[in-house]
Image (cartoon, helix red, strand yellow):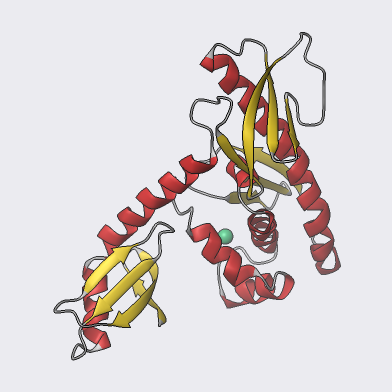
Length: 245
Ligand SMILES: [Zn+2]
């Protein structure tokens, strides 16, 4: 059974099951989901009290899992054969020698094609050079992908009188997106490039909705869910990687 609980570390969602066990057991799986088993005679209120007591430990464990999941999406040494995910799809990295000058292409030094991410590197033997090329690819590719997502999301808000925002990407460590309503700017975490596209659009809808409602009140969520019916699933998906990485 899926349940949720308000704790000092935020809303805790968990799955609980009555089992032939002596004590209440909590386990965090690879996706960061909280699984609870409890003995037959034990009331749910006792399970909740136990989870409240353990909430900090659970939050920390989820963060560790999220960090691991994030690392798994990004190549560690930027070497041929490493795996990288782009918009949630897996690619295998292939390092190629760049012939100077590097041609200016839409995704900079990278080209994602049929499951392979070709990355042109000026000095393939040097890890620094490979990492710099990968970072350049992420910059170029995220700029293009974020602009596409903005083309899709901005028209949803136009009838509500919200003008198209300027969307930029940044490396952030604790948030998926932020907005500056007066300047008409939205900043997205560049890491969203690695997650499924619905995460990117979901975060964008969320930030655009703040142009109308600055807080996370009922009307804010009603609007978000009206415009993005997939929102509850997207939120759950993002929790697999968030809140901190
Ligand atoms: Zn928000």
